[in-house]
Image (cartoon, rainbow, N blue to C red):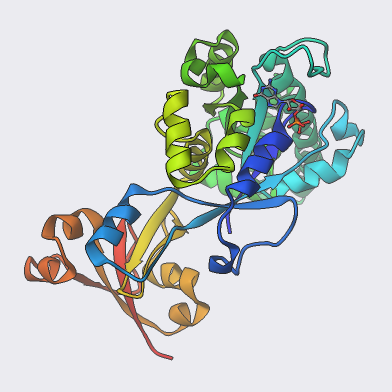
Length: 365
Ligand code: GDP
């Protein structure tokens, strides 16, 4: 499953947020493929389309798609030099698909800030610097190796060194690799370096409990927004403390509490949706009377690959898929209605699955 890692300086609210995540956590029986690890929280991805399909099909059970958050605690200044949990910490970041960087935007005299005062930009820069230093090391090593290969006369390596030098230059200027313009071809060249600052980032701006409804007025949040815009990153304001409280409630109580706070939905839901979007993920649906369910695929997945998310047998024995677009199904009101309108398509092995496709797979066992 795809994972987002939660990072941030000490005392910014990471554990509080992570506890809210595990508290709100998904029914694990539905997600046997997810990791069982105290540092991993499985969350369900909220999706209004799934509610609508449930209304249409009236299945016995509805299962949202899930997503994992990994708690990566222990980053301190000097991590790239092996301070604190240093290298172990960086290795954990290498394994995630996206980074949720928690920054402190709340004032509270009772909570010490590692640097003595609240300053989200300097916090971000502290962590980014460690990641940048780690990337510099990877890039420099590779440049050295590729240089040797140029001497062997292979033109490919000259091109590679040129690209790596450009990336190095940007890292020297404190710019993460995600802010460098790269062609698809260039991305492939550097893929196996697993650069940390190439990963998509979302800043979770942790505001105090009395600012949840007016987070955008918080000057720290505004600064984080400006900073994020310059490096192609996203921002989600959230109050970790409030999320921890929300996560303990259910149904009516939860709805009432959110209303009191002046919120339409929990910050956690916004965070999950933003992380999902950040990863460029698509959702497709299966809709039977037994179960209506959402599944996650990467953009660009073909029909057999999508079937494989359900079961490897579905992929191996794939014959074809019956597909109807979500919007067409809803407009037609039923599967049969969609069929009569000619909107139920038969697709083969090369079909690129679209976000919102409702699919039924035919396969050999
Ligand atoms: P971590 O070190 O980043 O994991 O931070 P914690 O989640 O342990 O939080 C550090 C302290 O800040 C704890 O005492 C939390 O209760 C407090 N804290 C976290 N979020 C908020 C918040 O939104 N408002 C206030 N006032 N305190 C918070």
